[in-house]
Image (cartoon, rainbow, N blue to C red; front, side):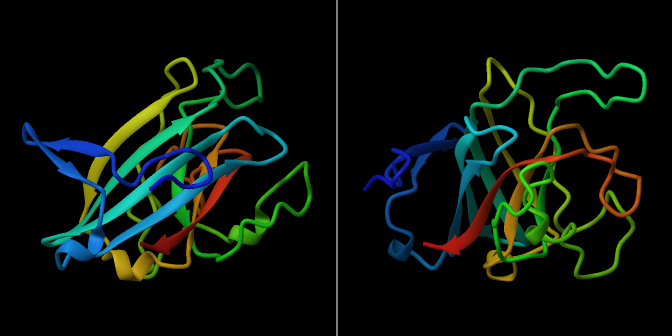
Length: 182
């Protein structure tokens, strides 16, 4: 099965030198969710997919994004472009709104337990652009897949500093995707 961006849910992914399928989440009791990432007016070439998989004590997150801007160091008061801040935000919409400051409808970082920034449930590692491509997987114990359904994933222009409140000074919002159960 392919979604409208050509990504296959029948893909394989490695864990501990074994390969697992994304194919049919109903084959077992695991819960899966997906966010199809689409770039906005500031970075229209970004597209990708983020999978969320329930595992004991938390969630594994798998990311494949293309079309990311290449790294550019910050100069003067301008933030660098990349590595890219990457978060779950508390909103439920990827409405662009103002093209100069898109995706404000996504709300702020998802922080259901009122933690200081850097420890929000929605704080993820940054995405590094390698010729526009970023792939990564990681584990978080901050939420279950069911907790994240309906929220949105945002990719920012600049890196998250993991300390500035409320959002880590990660810059403009480049891309967005709503988290949906599969």
